[in-house]
Figure 1 (cartoon, rainbow, N blue to C red):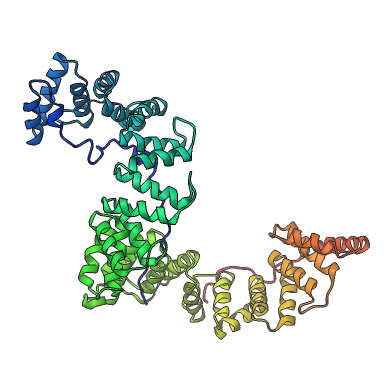
Figure 2 (figure 1 turned 135 degrees about the horizontal axis):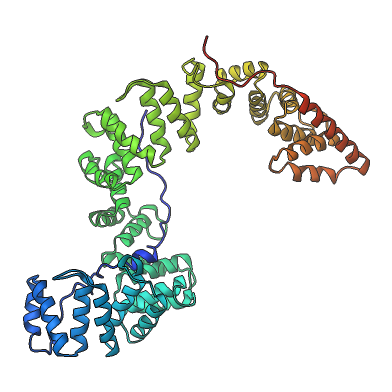
Amino acid sequence: MPFPHRPALSRLPVLCLAVLMAASPVPGQETQAPSASDMTAPDMAAIEQAWKRGDYVTVREGLKRLTETEATPLAQYRYGRVLYEGRGGPRDIAGAIDWLGRAVEQDHLEAATLLARILLTGASLGIERDPVRAGQLLAGAAARGDREAQYYMGLLSSAGDGMAKDEAAAVNWFLAAAEKEHVEAQYALSRAYSKGAGVAANPEKTLLWLTRAAENGHAEAQFYLANAHDTGQGAVRSASEALSWYRRAAEQGHILAQRMLGTKYMQGEEVPQDIGEALRWLEPAAQAGEPGAMTNLGYIYATGAGGVPVDDVRALAWYGRAADAGIGRAMLVLGRFHETGRGTPQDMGQAMGFYRQALAAGEAQAAGQLARLQLDGKLDGLTAPHEAVTWMAQALRGGDSRAETWLVAQAEEGVRPARTALALAWLERGDRAEEAAAWLERAAQDGDARAQAELGRLYVTGTGVPLDYEAAHAWLNLAAAAGMTGAGEQRDTVAKLMTPAQIAAAQARARDLFEAVEARVPATQQTVRDGN
């Protein structure tokens, strides 16, 4: 039956440098209107009023006139920024670079930082990226106390972009900006203390700066702070704090926070179960491509959780998207849907395909489903016996007696993989060692490298066979020649216990065995049966 999905969280990486250098305005800096105290030109008051009412055409035209009549760095910076942002007219990157450069020549602090950001963005703006010049501009602005420049200096130092890589220097720059309430710098600093990058790892400082960033509205920080309180790793475990921070991050559109919040409401975990609230958060996360949210939506519609009407078609659609994203549990459910005809025509071929995908994705239960279909005769004509051996071996390990009977029958019919799989399952179970060794011997003689390696190990330990270093060396030699991992090392280990004469005899024996194996013809063809 379908079931919810909540994969373990893994630490997500810090936002990549290319994204952080994107050309969008920086909150709290680039979208802030010119301050009245900076307006010394006669027309600045009118430009300020136009900015406040969103009349950027007037702003652009007014700043253009000012830059043509007055050479003030403030007007040059503001005009360069308007051209860069494309306010009041088309975006003009070349013009922005020109006017910002003029402002920089007059030591305008913010112009240096903005020009550096443009140079770091590069190709997406249609210009050549220039991290060296950007670093020079940022170094001067950072030394003069510009927190944005200090943050970017931290990024460049950490990445070794345009300057020598220096993670210790990066931490110092992040710290300088973080102490001035630069939110991204606070988050970057928390990650540095968490990873011990450029500074000794420090859980207390990690939590301190993570909390500061979260309190200042950083969605990623809010999510990780929620996770810390949720798991008790890095913070005091607190269900209420976790829920509160997950909600804050979710409301900012953080898709993992949305999935976590929706899952809690779906399962009634530390909150009353509320499927409406679960859907409210799972749906946007799923639409944004979050696989776990897709799987959970499939579960809700497949089971009718919380009174939602069962809708197999919608369940199938969400499970399908989750399977396409690589979720093994979704593949497993899709196999069951196609097997039983839920929401789609019954199709054993499709069912087998999804079960096999699920097994490859690590869902051990899929082996049992495939073994059941094979034993029930529902895969006749769809698969060859040797293909089903893996499923049956896993089912046997799970205690399925029918799988054991099937493997014995296939082994007796000469299906080589069945002989090896049956022998290994018995050896793992700790019984029927002599029978297991006999099946391995037959599979090894048929050229099964895995059987050759395992048989060699049995002769080393005397399990199910007499202790025989020469036989062990010979079979391990054949397995090594066939490319079996570790067989060569084990052969060499055995050789240290043997005399030169015994090694020579073992090598001769290996040559004879190789010739005998090469001469053998498989007892049966490994083909799909036509079911007749």
